[in-house]
Length: 144
Image (cartoon, rainbow, N blue to C red; front, side, top):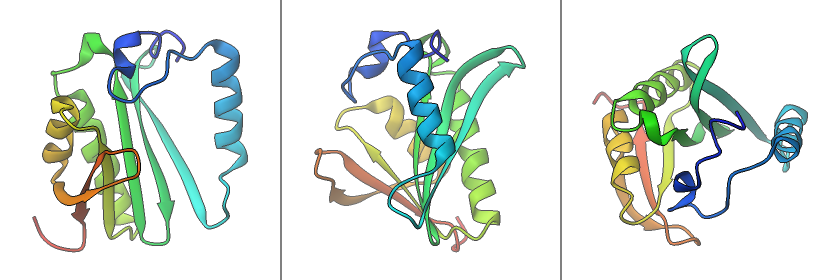
């Protein structure tokens, strides 16, 4: 995943910089160990074109019947539907597990993430989080 996440352009809206190998090892170790506070579950999927070609990830932070989604796909594979397809699959799986509300935090002006959220069926809630990102949501218990 170091190679997948090494493009500084991926951090234009979210901030930060590409993680190195040791930083990713620490991050993944924390994810395997589990979240804090208790009552959350962290779920992570690697998006792959083939078994040996990762191009991004989708993650969900789950609490009770709600999940907060995030996604990243390499700049070389953006605007091809991969993030939308992968996130839609994750959203469907979460709905089948009893998750009734999905949210995502989208940076203002991040058209790509807005397209993914829309493609999953999410809509802007009108709320903004502490970082200034717009909160998008989808009630999975209602037909779309």
